Amino acid sequence: MTHSVERREAPRVPVSVYLEQHVEGQTHRCFTSNLSRSGLYMERPATPFHRHSSHVQLEIPLPDGESEPLWASAEIIYDCFDALFHGTAVRFVEMSQRDRGRLSGWLSREAERAA
Image: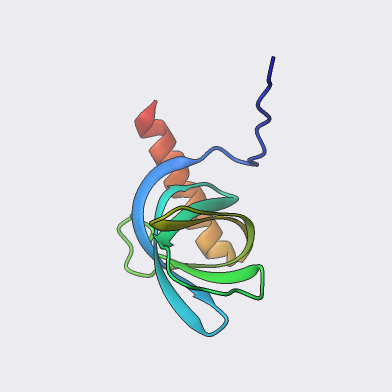
């Protein structure tokens, strides 16, 4: 019998948002399909790309009605590739207290809506 081990620190909420990933002086437009208090999963078209650091900066337009995006420093914890997409899971390392509060509030409201 195989047991699956949940490695995530926080439950993820489905979301459909385009974000900007800034890494090593380059900006990549990515699509995120889920978001949590501790991180997110994003995809971008699979194109040649060499990353020398496991740290990225993210500009996330949270769908909470505010015009300012969230800004976060994140650490890459998982990369996967297929013929079309490069998927990346990240863990948030640093985020302003204000942005963390916005994210937490939005996630709580989404969880209540889904219940």
